[in-house]
Image 1 (cartoon, rainbow, N blue to C red):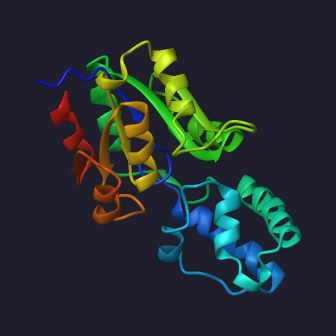
Image 2 (image 1 turned 90 degrees about the horizontal axis):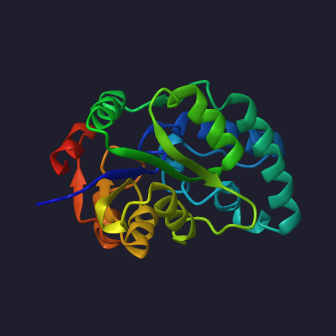
Length: 217
């Protein structure tokens, strides 16, 4: 019998569909630099490891020098910082899932590789009506996922053993983080990655819709 008492959520591709705002912002930066643009579906495979990683991977290979990366990263922070809320919305079923978890007194937390200040802006707009105990994005000097450092920080805040915490995410990085932290890795199939990646990195369960998560509680 499962005895799960908390859920740690990834943000982009799990709780919120942020792909249009991220992709449109990055394409605006690329266009301003005269670089080729990418389709929105292509962005699904380069999001999730922080903005620097995103910027580096969408630049043409011959333009991935440090100066160009830094310039485009600065422009991306400005662009996304001004338009992160244009099209972003919770995935269908997420509000209902959070309502039911809160009713059951299941503890809630968020662990994202999105810059912390933007994570908090997005959280305040879309998710702050639910009782999350901890919300963390990427902070300077602290390793991002799949390093488990912040997952351990969340465990300390929740004061719940790792084996009693579900980790729900849509990428291999999320599954790897969960396993390193001793949490139970669940893959979200509505997100940015595919089942093969989630399985490869250790998902114990994969769910097609948010309400399927309730079967674990």
